[in-house]
Amino acid sequence: MVTILREENIIAGGVGIDNHLVLAAGILGTTGASLNRMLNMGAGAVVTKSIGPVPKEGHKGPCVYVMNGAVINAMGLPNPSSGFSEELEILQGKPVIASIFGGNPEDFSLVASWFKNKVRGFELNVSCPHAEGYGAQIGCNPDLVQECTHAVAKTGLPVWVKLTPNITDIKEAGIAAQKGGASAVVAINTVKAMRISTGMRRPVLGNITGGLSGPAIFPIALRCIWDLYEALEIPVIGCGGVSSADNVIEMMMAGASAVEIGSAVLDGEDIFSKISDELYSCDGERSQDIIGCAHD
Image 1: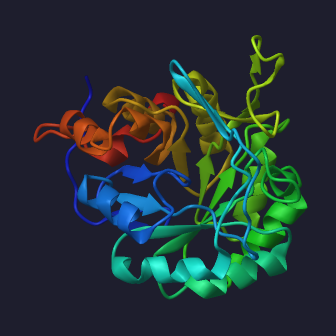
Image 2 (image 1 turned 120 degrees about the vertical axis):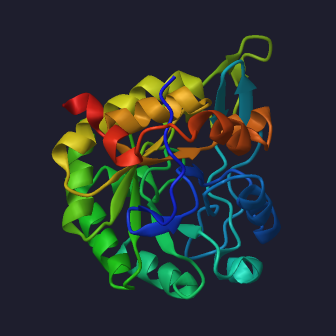
């Protein structure tokens, strides 16, 4: 298997990270303690749970359905809003990216103002498929993507824009983010999906539909990374179904500068150290020689 050299001073989309593996938003990101634990267990950076302009309780349950090799969730973006700033106190100086969402540029600007002195950058959630008025409803409108990105870019911190695959052409949203001043795009968020319990004769999720994650969506994410790398001048951060070091290499070859890991944490919180042990070696290749090499 192809391996890469361990490097110092890794920069991904303007954010300094300790290695190429990043904890994805919504996975053990609700408290400062859990985020800190993931950093201590090998994550090169962590993305918080998505935080919005007002507190939200989220959707009624069941909110998560776990299958073999996949997860469908419909949490509905539950969050404490500005109260989350207290959770970041123990993470000062560490590679933390705040995931934020809103219904318009003003919302995004407001939420960013709460955290701009406590994180290294922002990830804009314009891609959640199960939050009415937020998420993908923003991400499917290139003009809104550009405006919301620009509103947060004014903070002077790096801005990653997490894109939805539930769109006709993801490149249009990526180009809009780039025009708005994004430092990187993240591809992808979950894929809209559902399951029905034949025994109960009803959908398994309280919200009926949710977002599919896990290895099943890896090929979708890979194709999106490929397309965005070809279309954009800013970096792409890979996300979606990553569960092995070879998956990481594949995403990097498609164009990813770093890779987020989410659902694979269900297999064990040591997933970052396990992947790192296989990903890095003293005789590996430089990451810059791997990123996008499949396009040559």
